[in-house]
Amino acid sequence: MKKVRVLVIDDSALVRSILSEGLNKDPMIEVVGVAMDPYIAREKIFKLRPDVLTLDVEMPRMDGVEFLRHMMPQFPLPVVMVSALTGKGQRLTFDALDAGAVDFVTKPSVNVAGGLEMMLEEICSKVKMAANVDVSHWKRKGKQQEQSLQKIQSHALAVSTDKVIAIGASTGGVEALVRVLTRLPSTIPGVVIVQHMPSGFTRTYAERLNSQCAVDVKEAQSGDRVLPGRVLLAPGDQHMTIQRSGGIYLVRCQPGEKVMGHCPSVEVLFQSVAKYAGANAIGIMLTGMGSDGADGMLAMRQAGARTLAQDEQSCVVFGMPKEAYHRGGAERLVPLGGIPAALIQLLQNKS
Image (cartoon, rainbow, N blue to C red; front, side, top):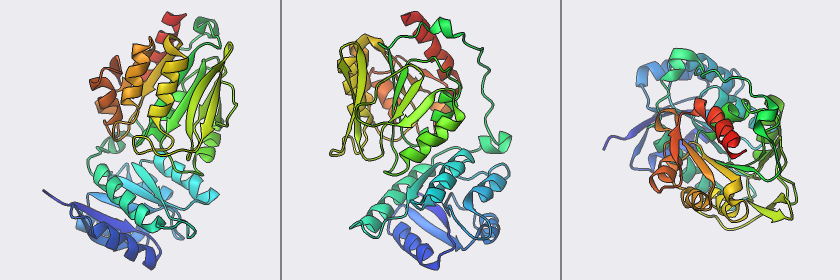
């Protein structure tokens, strides 16, 4: 089987060496070159024709985001970002995902035992996944045109606190969630989300979404109430569940063992929604690798919830939606651009 050809771009010679050595240990990956900045990288891309780039977020001459904005419309390639845990690094990482990067890994903390090994294992996995992602649409249009959505009058939603919208997402979900949530009215019923993301990034991501959306978005804390117009995002290192207290829903966030390989886990959230919200819920599965949440979505549907999953053509990775659909959890597959309208229709029908 053909190896994935990788170009490593990082201004640190030590990081270039570590990444190259770690990636080359995987029998399915070959590092074909390294570059210390985007200017050198540009020449090597044309010369070496790599399948995937790993790209440092913060570099002195041109940061990774600016490089992506120049490169993707002209020569789109799958890119995995390598990010620091600093506030600036987090902001640039989300900018990079907006600009076309497929996914990201974080540089390990010196205080975490085995952190380097875990990071190298993660980047190998994400590089192999990225090699199968079609990014050609960036050449056609810097950003995909979305189908128009008519304005929804707030009264049509018949908002009440007994409805819950639960969303699961992983690889590609950072941008997919932006494209869904920015098109929802402020009167939408309460939304709870699990997006696979490292600890420390979810708060920055929630703040970023909050600045872009009509709804209020925040990183969830135990005891937060699920309210119309509010979106609660599971913290990056805690499982999130919903619980019913009289006529209202509250979330509970707590650390725990990984479920389906993740903490937070979509499976954990969806199972709680099936148990406590039942037919008052709507489940949505967005792009992601693996099968996290597939059984939970089936449990939701069996409890009377309505369910949707993103279709293959619009997914970065058609893993989680595919499993949810094939196992009978998702009623139908919908293009990403059509999910807001489909969601509104389901809410109107429920009303």
